[in-house]
Image 1 (cartoon, protein in one colour):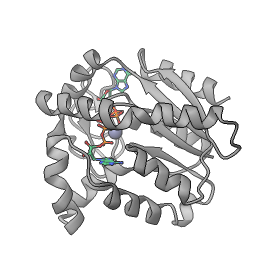
Image 2: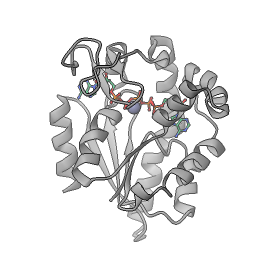
Image 3: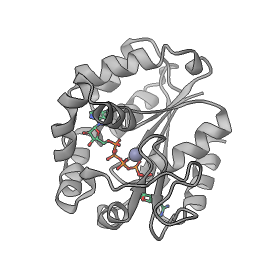
Image 4: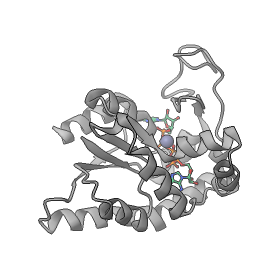
Length: 217
Ligand code: AP5
Ligand code: ZN
C-alpha cells in the first residue's frame, strides 16, 4: 500500500499518519521530520534547510526528491509507505510519477485556515520520533513529556503565528494544485493513477481517523 497524505500545515497529517501506518504495517515518510532531524544533527542538509524552514518556505525540489528517492529504496518500504508532507509541488509529484513508483491512494485532509493558528499554537512535538500532541485537543499523559519515552516535548520554531500564515500561503500557492493534478490524472482513466479521497479534517482525532479508514475501505 502506497499512500500520500496531503493537507495544509496543521491539517493533522502527522497525527493521522500514525493510525494509517499501523493499520497497513508501512513506514511513515515525513519529509518535514527528516529535515528536522537533519537540522538537529547539524548536517550540511540541515544547515541548508534551517533558514528556509524557519521562514515557512519550501526547501528546493532537487534536495527533497533526492532525499525521498533514497528513502524509498530502504528494505522497510518493500510493502509500501505513507508520504506525509511529500509531494508538495508539481515537480515533486512528477518526479515520483516518472520514477515508476505507482501510488494507490491520495488522501487530502481538509481544514479551514481559520482553525490552523490555534492548532499550531498548542502543538508540542517529540523531536526524535516526530510524535505530535496538542495541549488541549490531544494532550500527552504527563504535561510536557512524550508518552512513549518520557522525554521533553518542544514547540516547533515554525509554529509562530506569522510563520504559520506564510506556510498557509505557500500551501495554497504551491501544494494545493496537486489536488487537481491527481484528480485529473485519476479521471483520465490511467491505471497508474492513484485514487483521490477528500476527507474532512474537522472533529476529534478519532473521528478523522474513522473517516480516512472508511474512505480507504
Ligand atoms: P512539515 O513538517 O511537513 O509541516 P506541515 O506540512 O506544515 O505540516 P505540519 O507538520 O505543521 O502539520 P500536520 O498536518 O502534520 O499536523 P499535526 O498532525 O502535527 O514541513 C515543515 C517544513 O519542512 C516546511 O514548511 C518546509 O520548509 C519543509 N518541507 C517539508 N517537506 C517538504 C517538501 N516535500 N518540499 C519542500 N519543503 C518541505 O497536527 C497539528 C496540531 O493539531 C497538533 O498539535 C495536533 O495535536 C492537533 N490536531 C491534530 N488533529 C486534530 C484534530 N482532529 N482536532 C484538533 N486538533 C488536532
Ligand atoms: Zn506534520
